[in-house]
Length: 273
Image (tube, rainbow, N blue to C red; front, side):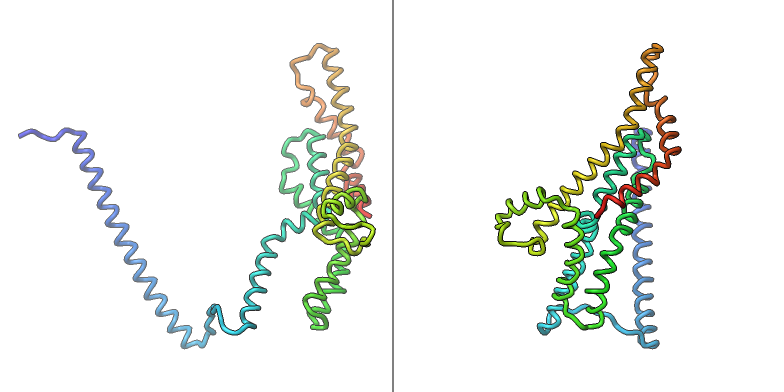
């Protein structure tokens, strides 16, 4: 009688082990399912004995319930778009771009990391927007919570401070561009009548232009340091030594001695009207 080869024996043993493992896993799942069902029944009985309230979601019914459901859906949609709204209508765009250009000018690669830059930009934006937020709170949020005004009036009053802030930062050329693209008659509308879908993109491109202008000014002193270090290395014949390796300590020293963070943040805050 011919004996099976060692390779065939190994395959048979592996299949046997897999089958045993699958059986054990199935048995374990059945046990867990049974325990879960028993625990659910026990919890239901305990909830009935203690008198906990039942929570259920029911779709349909009267028109009022449908309107409430639609409002809840709109609220969740607004919360989903909240990060984009923060970027579009606040100084966040200008601040985070300036901080990113500053990091590139220093040549520190990923220091400070992106998380730190975004956090700084977020809280600095909150600092700049605080007067606007306080105006919105006093004119729209508090009267609405006190049921003195409705939702539509509250939204209208909340737009006014935000609109004033964006108009103060938006260049006339950028605003005129989107007014023309929207085919609006500029002679028949005032600044307060400019729709938000026209004002927001004009505000954003104005913020981008301001951010790059500030970034250019920040780059100049560090560019001078790089050029001086590169010229010295070339005159010494040290062509294989990367200039950025030598210039980085000098740029950091210059930035620290000039109290760079104080100057950058102070200039950024003062750049908003």
